[in-house]
Image 1: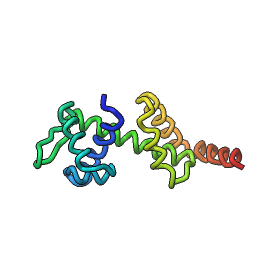
Image 2: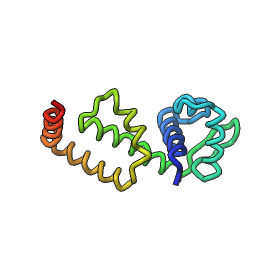
Image 3: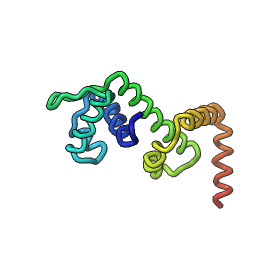
Image 4: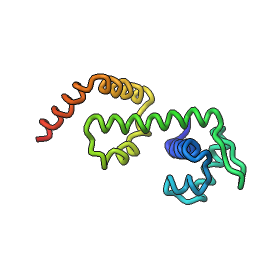
Amino acid sequence: MPTPSMEDYIEQIYLLIDTKGYARVSDIAEGLDVHPSSVTKMVQKLDKDGYLNYEKYRGLILTKRGEKIGERLVYRHDLLEQFLEIIGVDHDKIYEDVEGIEHHLSWNAIDRIGNLVQYLKMNPERQKELIEMSEQIDE
C-alpha cells in the first residue's frame, strides 16, 4: 500500500491526467505546492513500486494499479467533501479538513461514510433534521 505522501502524488497525477490528458513534473509540483526535485524523486519511487511508468524528459503514465488507486483516492476525497458539506461544515473549512483526515481513515470507514452519504441524499428530510439539530446544539 502507498504511504499518505505517495497517495497525494498518485491522486494529483490521476487528476491531472483526467483533466489535461497528461501530468508533467511542473504541474504536479504546482498542484502539491512542492519543489520539482521532490516530485522527480517521488515519481521515480512510484515508478519503482509499479504505480506509474516514468521516462525522464518524456513524461509519465499511471499503470493499471496506479489508475485504480488514483480513482479510489479521488473518490475518497470527493466523498469526504460531500460528507462534510452534508453535515454542515463551513464551506471554507471543508478542503482543509478533508486533507487533514483522508489519510487517517480505513477503507472500511470510507465505505461506511459512503453509505451514510447515500442514505442522507436519498432521505433529504433526515439531512434537514441533522442540520436543525446541529443548529440547536450550537446555540
